[in-house]
Length: 231
Image 1 (tube, rainbow, N blue to C red):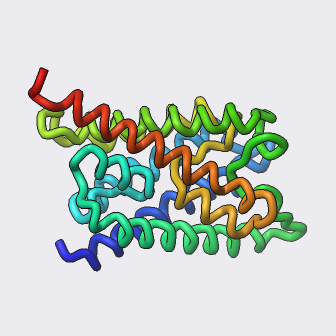
Image 2 (cartoon, one colour):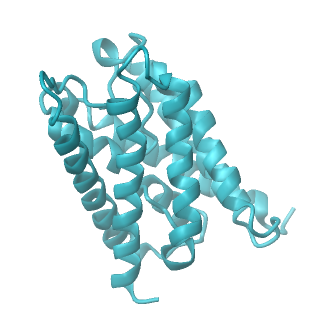
Image 3 (spheres, helix red, strand yellow):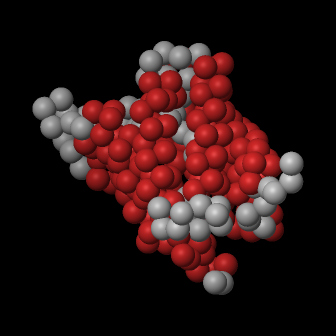
C-alpha cells in the first residue's frame, strides 16, 4: 500500500479518535441530565479504536497514535523510516478533529472553552494527582496498551479479534486513568487539545509525549522478547 494512502488512513482514523473520544467528553459528558459520565467517555475512546481498526486496519495498521507507532517499531513490527510520516499524519488528523469539535462546541450559546478535554497533572488533573502520579500512570497505561496491541496482533494470536481486545483495552485504560491525567496514552490526542487550550496545557504537554512513548518502547522490547522462540 502506498505511504500516501496509509498516511491518509492514519489522518482519518486519528481525526475520528479525537472527534469521538474527546467529543464525548466535551459534548456528551457535560450535561448532568443527559451526560454519559466518565465511564461513557472511556467507552467512546475504545469504540473509536475498535471501529477504525476494522475500517482502516487493512490499510495502515490503524496506529492512530505516535506511541503505538513507536511501540510497534520497538517490537520489530514497523519500519523506523516510516515513523515520521505516520506521526505527522496522526498529529494533523488529531488537530483537524479538535478543530471540528471546537466548531461544534462553540455553536452553543454561552460556550466556554475550559479544559476542552486536555490532559494535565497537578491543578489540571481531574483528581488533583501530582506530576509523579501522572508520569507513572501514563507510562504504565501505555505500556499495557502496547502489550495488548502487540499480543493481539501477533501471528499466533486468534485472527479477527484484535480490534475487540484493543478497543476494550483502551476503554479499561480510560476507566483507570481519567481521574489522574484525563488519560492521554496518545501524544497526538494530547497535542490537538492543548493547541486549543494553550497556556497550561501546552506547558504540560511534554509529559504526554515523553511518558507514552517511553511506555510504548518498553512494551515493544518486552513483547519482542515474550514472543520470541528463544529461551
